[in-house]
Amino acid sequence: MLFVQKFGGSSVANVERIQNVARRVAKAASAGNQVVVIVSAMGDTTDDLIDLVKKLSDRPPEREYDVLLSTGEIVSAALLATALQAMGHKAVSMTGTQIGIRTDGVYTKAKIVDIDASRIRKELDKGFIVTVAGFQGMDERGDITTLGRGGSDTTAVALAAALKADVCEIFTDVDGVYTADPRIVPAAQKLPAIAYDEMLELATAGARVMQSRSIEFGAKFGVRIHVRSSFHEGEGTMIQSSGAGMEQVLIRGVAHDTEEAKITVTDVPDRPGIAAEIFGALADARISVDVIVQTATENDTNDISFTVGKADLSRALDIVKAATKKIGGGDVAADENIAKVSIVGVAMAQHSGVAATMFRTLAAEKINIQMITTSEIRISVIIDKARVADAARALHTAFGLDKR
Image (cartoon, rainbow, N blue to C red; front, side):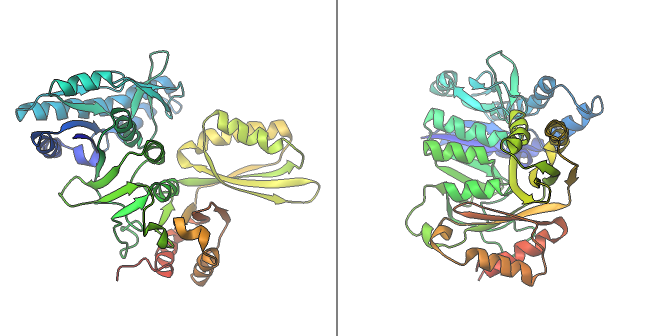
C-alpha cells in the first residue's frame, strides 16, 4: 500500500517528538508499505520567523516573506529523514520545488496548478521513505511560493491525489474531528466519519483541524482522509463521501472563528457596479470576504458591512479606503471584537426550523446577532467575540450534540 502521512507542527516540535514520528513512520514502512511524509515547521517556528521579519519591516516583500517561511518546513523534513536514517531506514528529504509542486504566482496564498510526482515515485521504487517539506511550491518563474496557513494539509492531500495513494493520514494534536472545539465545549463528541461537504463547511467556518482547500482536493479527487492523533494509535475520523446513515444526522457540528474582523463602509452610492469596485479590488489582492450585509439608508446610499480574516485586515482596509474614495463613499471602520459561530449538517436542507432553533437559542442566551449568512448545509452568525463560548455551548446542546 502507498501511505501519505502528514504531521503538524506540534507533532515535530522537538527532537523527541521527531523521533516519535520517525518510529511511527518506520512502523508503516516496515510492514511493507511505501510511505511519503509531509511535515509542517517545528512548533512555533513559523510564528517566530514572522516575528523576526516584522522587526525589519511592517510590510516585508512578499517574495522574501515566502522564501523565509518555507525554511521552517525544510528543517523539519531534513530532521525527520535524518532520524529515520539513524533508525536504519532509507530516507530522503525533499522541498516543494524538488517534488514538482507548481503553483500560480500569488505569494503567501499560492494555489497548486500541477504536481509532477515522477521524482517521488523513483525514490519510492528504490525503497526510500520520502519526507516532504509542506506548505510550499514553485511558480512558473522558479520562485518559491507558500500555500497559506495550514498549507501542509493541502500539500498532503494534493500529493495523495497525484500519487493515487491508498489513504492520506493527517496526524495532529487532536484525535479526530469533533462536534465542536472540546476546549470550549467539554461535551463535544469525536465523529467516526464526516462527509467532505460537512468538513469543508466546518473548516471554512473556523474549525482548525484541516485547511479548507485540502478538503476541496480530497472531495475533487476522492482521497480518503483519516484525521488521527500523533500521540496514540487509536482510530480518528474518516473524511469521505456521504454514506448511508450520514444524512440522517441533522447537525453534524458547531464551529467558531475568532480570527475574523468586520469592515463597514458607509454612504455607498446606490447604483450598479459600486459593490464590484470594492469587492473586485479585494479579490484582485486575493483577500477572501465571508459574510456580507448591505443596508439601505436615506439619500440613495447604502451601508455595506463584511468580514475578512484578521490577518488580511490591514491590507483590506487600505484597499477598501482607496476604493471607497474612488466611488465617493463615506467612512470606513473596522471592528475586531467579533466572532463567527456556525452550525453545519448535510441534512439541514431537508428540515425546516433549523434557523429558528438557532436564533431562539441565541436569544435565550441574550446573544445579539450582528450578521447572518447561509448555505445549503451551513448557517453562520456574527456575534460579539466575548460571547462565542456561550453561543457554541448553547447551540451544541440545543441540537442534541452533547455526550450522552
